[in-house]
Image (cartoon, rainbow, N blue to C red; front, side, top):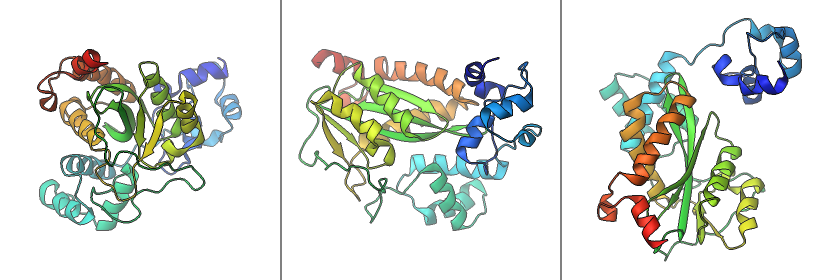
Length: 300
């Protein structure tokens, strides 16, 4: 079996990885195919990893840690303005999870969460990345493809979490494009943007100042279009991307929490069905009970 074939069969043949391993080593270890005619020694050489780590199955996330992350996921989705103190209280009161506030703080960091309220230094762009000004202070989306917003959220799985990136048309609430991945890296966002641009092109593209959206690879795709104005949320502006935050809440309560997906592949199949329903069948109160596609198509 070739290295490319190993790559294609990666996750389904060797799921999971120890938390303590660096992300790149983790990814390489998941490429090992225990049924391949290639010996484990040769596969380890090709992948540049230690052979000794292949003989012991990877340890799944501890159940206690997973229970904490899942509980915080659900509480935060319902109450995104809760900080560590309120989360700590609700975890003990409603979920019988007795942990310190440091554990809550670390779990929120793992999930990339911050309470939604204005505060100092809420956005930390990568040093050296270009930051664009916020352009939407006096602007309301007035037609399809006027303003697109994008963001990333976490998707809970049976044994961990994945990440979902989506591009949303603010006027029609249509999900223009979306993608999921096992890590919150720039490639996830770049692919989502490229997929969206095959459908349309916005007048204004808005994101936060996260490194995924301020990196050169992402910005170059936008700049190649020449007609797109780039906008980024200002620090402490907690409600700038409120439409996408509402989308995350809807997706989780109407699909993710109900289905209990085990793997990224299951999520991909499930969300394909859900976003088809969301865009074409789900009436939105804010759209006078029309669907996103009805608004997007009729005025576009």
